[in-house]
Image 1: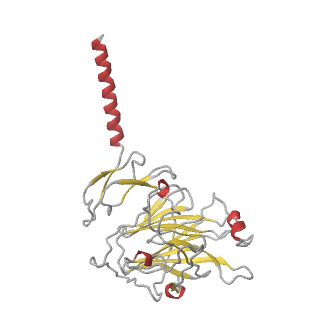
Image 2 (image 1 turned 90 degrees about the vertical axis):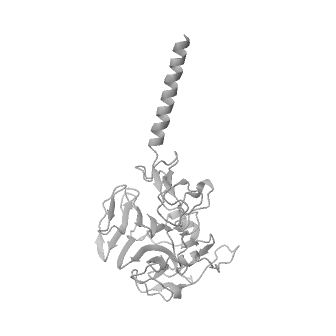
Image 3 (image 1 turned 120 degrees about the horizontal axis):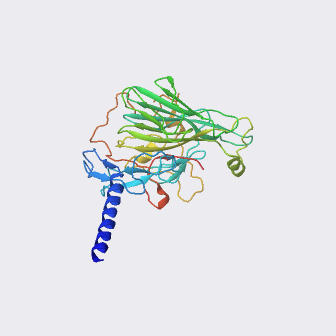
Length: 340
């Protein structure tokens, strides 16, 4: 009888070890390759909540490692824009800077403004909007993004639609001035011949992540101005246009201290945000400084982008701006543009 009991306990123990080993083997291991990181070449195991850095489920959290964190620990994030972390810019448009301060930048409908201008990266936004009778400014939303890196260009935009249909893809892409087709379907992807830009769909339609390896990662959604938004804010949206626009979230790697732009300047180490604390809608200017002549131009008066721009390592902030899921109370997750 005693032998049977011991044998049963041994079987249970073996099953437990086997199960634990299987769970552990399903967890992805991440490695940091930034030589200046305290986590350089350390093997970091993803947590059970998000065991891998990709998922077949568009709503699932994925594994992410902030290589500039001194604790060298993996965490979970969502692959779609998070509207509540530092760096956000939403609504018409509201930004949360890299310094965590909320401000509004209105711009002007059908014009382009620089969000980020650094030596090796330029990100512009084209605004769409309208101005109801009696108003002194436009209501605006981000309709398109234009990226310049090295001597290449990439753009993505929300396609104009009279009414919103979730079953229709409202994203349009271009690379080096040519239209780019990315098949619909979650995890459908495209990459450039040099592998210096990758675009992956994070849902069947209307959501992508754009990655410039070791430079930036941009998470994008296309959304309409809803009837509820229209009712609350009295936008007076016409029946022939739902004002499809972009939600965008950025993660940057090693921005220089010279970085400029509506959003970029808030990542300068000594930046003092002029937004007035305690004001319901603190509006910050800069239209004249950051206006560009086109979506793919770097000709604003404060732009610093150079087509052959290479960061001076002494000037780099050596900082990775993340986009963790902050719903659990974490404060990480810089660089976001979202929607109400």
